[in-house]
Image (cartoon, rainbow, N blue to C red; front, side, top):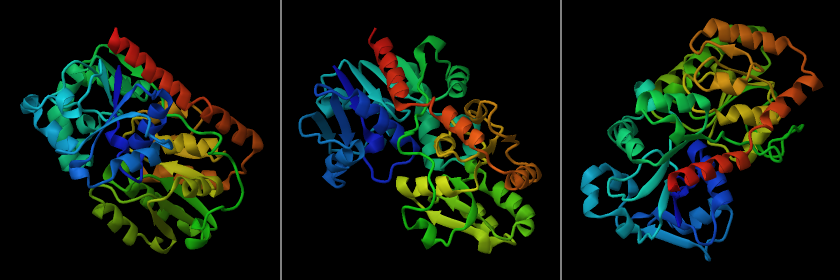
Length: 377
């Protein structure tokens, strides 16, 4: 029997890891699959949240909800967690437990599989929330050493896992993030109110959290360098505030064109699709990514992109997208100015969409299935 720990989707407002978990898990869940989640004192209504995120009724599923303590606390217990074995805590009879968010608790016995999206905690620890950094740096190596197999989201991340965590190559499986090309499609005009709400005309778009790793400060600086030449163009930053946003917010506030920089806050998938469809082009200056889902979502909408020459983005761009040194504001300004002067073609849109269509959630689920089979064997 297989168990899925679904903690990454036991919250509302999913972002990258949550979306990956939901898309893969819903394709591999069967009625005899155990589903695990932690809901301390039952205060969050996890069953309803899981049903909402999985888009299914779980009344016929084998759902095990732990209400005695939070999962993060259980993981922080480390070896002391063996006092309360995971199988006793969850009342699990599974032969293999699949974790979708890096870490396993020390009280876990038997075979398990983890999902490691990137190693930013090791490569760029200064760009992370201190609490999460300590958690990952304190427990990830142990979790990786105890895992029977590891699922990750790019060949880049696979190499990182081999190099840093010393996991044998044969134990690592790559399941690229998929893109729903039935949902992310080209379109004209706004179907939601977001365009009217922010008075959007012509704009350059970024989608993601506002935090140091995303390198928004360089983007704001580059936009300032070209803004005078394109007075009708705005820069839209779509996404909520992440860890340590103060420097980013200060850069926006101090920009000479701050009145043309739009912050939307957290957006729904429908609003994101609207923004992607109607943008002049998409920019993603991130310093480090395990994959970079907004890039393939933009491409699926037929929207051109400029991305960083960094981490997995080189792999995902596949020689189709312009690659810019992450923190070179002059190069970003030059690339953005050039893209604003280009005339988009149907052939270019078709090429972008064709590339995005190679990334499917079915393939990600197949990779997870292969990792499960390897772990069981």
